[in-house]
Length: 445
Image (tube, rainbow, N blue to C red; front, side, top):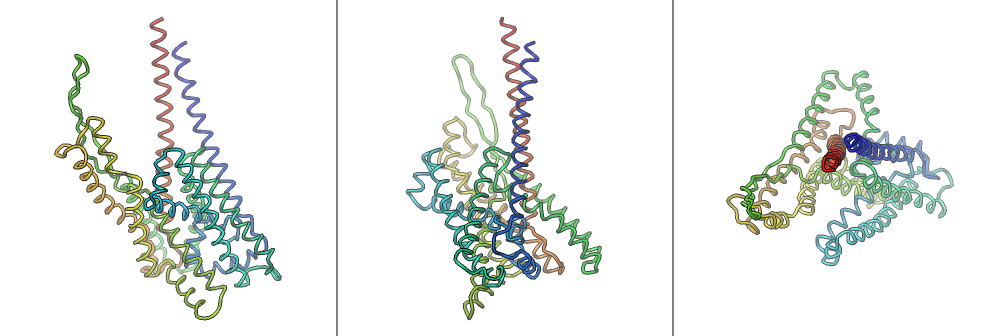
């Protein structure tokens, strides 16, 4: 009886919790996809769809990809999660340079909640700016219905877009807390995957119409598979620093020295640098395009040239995008992983790195290894994100092939699978421990 009581119910409870988290994730994604089809009042979706057909290979195509097609349909979720990502970037950067914010960050859970609250306020402010320029630019291009140029139109349209951005922020936080995986990454992943069927159909249509040779289409498929294999290999790669534990003695019992390792991933920052870099690149490009379209004269021409120069496949896009990815790899890794704290924890635990004194010398060694790994990891992420753009320019592919989207999809799927396995392993471990305790209790009694 003790054996049945301690094993199966705990495992069923663990599976039940995982299933409830998965159901919440699927429900949240369904609501998000449903929201991308609710249009902003006063704007003409057909005219904007025609504009996207003309400018699909510019930054608008990338912006539409991150919004899951909401931009093309002029949905209330057109701003997507980008204002929240931009606000998170700004707050993290300010926390590193502002002593007051850094002090708040060190207050533990209370400080984290306060920083999150500031991030939400900043998200609303950025969404207001982006929504204003978006509505003004589209209205200036004649994308609104006739007669829609009043104050009430601007108020309703801007309020709808800002509300949609705030809802996306809330939904992402709820997925992180009650679902599986990082909420922001999962929403971006859902938006990208939603556009994959149309992208594949477009590729086959181009091959059937003669715009793309079948051999080149097969070669592109093989390249995609090779990139996926490369990303999986690099994401699993790690450098293991040998850790030696000193010999300990407890009473009359002596414990021999043990050897372990400190794992450091090649890519410690994950897919966050790509998302951050895309957000930073899209924000000025979108403002430049909307402001340029809504105004006239020399300023309009300059703004439109800036937006065009920052589009996918342009030399300036290669340089700026690659530099931002590398920069954010170093910044995010430095924020998330502190070699000094790791070295201090090892010292307190009676562990040391062979050949290096505990404390500052170990911290410098870990920092050196971490810096070298980040160099390799940042170059790898930048190469994967930019290589399809080089391929698009070199092979003259008649559709946009996004390395950013491919990288995000692969990394998010890997993170999702690892978290599911972690949930399963945790609950299996709990059920085994309960089973062992109950068996022992039965024997003693």
